[in-house]
Length: 347
Image (tube, rainbow, N blue to C red):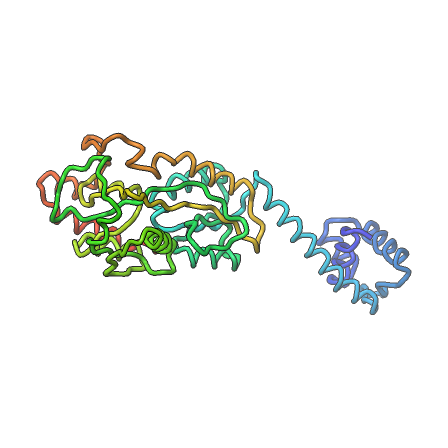
């Protein structure tokens, strides 16, 4: 008995006649009859009663039809899962990452995946560490980039890259030229009002663990669980925050934010890759994400990957922003920037 025997038998049983099944399958009636006879001979039981109007299943035939349908479905599922693991085939992918990682990685990664897998359905999701790991465990994400924060327990977490953390401040009250050597010692942070994400966020867990190890009492005055809300607090001048400068490269180069590298001791966050344990994950997808992170290493480490921040290296800004900067009207840039944050996702 093989899968073809089962498929032919189920088709004849459902059609109620060899002639209708022959049309449906595109196979001659004698071929179908031979397969059914072979099945009955092998199983030593009658599966179909033949009459002038067609065929009727026996009790044994009804039972074989039920079992056969289940077997065929399981075989199809096994084929789909194994094909999904082929590095050359990507039917769909759900990828999660924090918003501050997405700001750097998402455009080039999406472009590379689209070029390599033209027909793949790609879904990207921003979220905090806790939500991303929960989605991985639930099987709604294939792969997630998360922070390797204290207390994370995932069986296949793989560290990819460490990023330095900077103090991010508004330049509204203290405009000054920025150079890559601007620093601030950790002890000085205790006198600066801060806005940080809540405790579910990996960045907050990393900062808290670092501060506790170094006996630093940080002055956290605000908690915001979304990237946009946190940056709006910073832009207002109410507080500063702690983030990789690379996530805000455009805003820093445009003179809207300033960054100072934290030293003595330095503060880093490690970006790690985790794959779902509840669904098969395409090996090629994992490899491509890892290669893209490595390719983007210089972007993730900015501005440490550059000697100085030259005004001539400024990124292209929208016309309204360029006009505002040229006329020294930073309030127009602020309004434009804040509007661009309205749709931002969690940090």
